Image 1 (tube, rainbow, N blue to C red):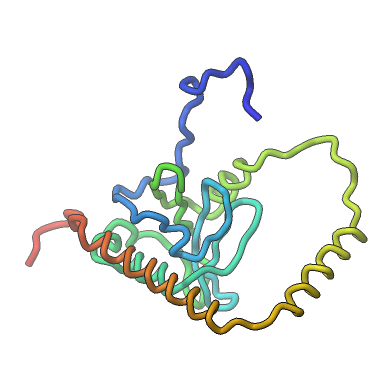
Image 2 (tube, one colour):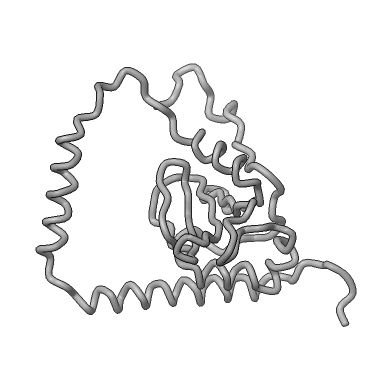
Length: 188
């Protein structure tokens, strides 16, 4: 809901937390990293729990496509810009997060705490709601699980999903390859 007295041009564009990554980003980068939510801002980091990429939009978290994130992070156009960031490893959770603005296609590197606070702030809290009916929530989860279990397995759907992921990765690398490598010193 918008405030009737607020003029759209008077609403400032939110600033990403941390240090802006000065690079044009590939389209749908968050989706290439495995994010399927609808939040404008989402952060990514590597977690030793499961040794996998984790996305966080301030309300939900999930496991992403680690190979796409590592391909992006190690690309010659990106690596010099994020080399000082600690996004985590197989052994450590890391102190930094790659924060993406899906509306403006910008990215920044922010500390984990700063990123978490920023991401949480994008989800307004609604006061005055009735207490949650946990029995109804459990029943809804049970019904959704039963429906999922009853659905027939479609190997073609799995193949299409993998093809879509590969296509996103190819698109991301082609986009990065087409952009100039950032100047970080003399080329040998």
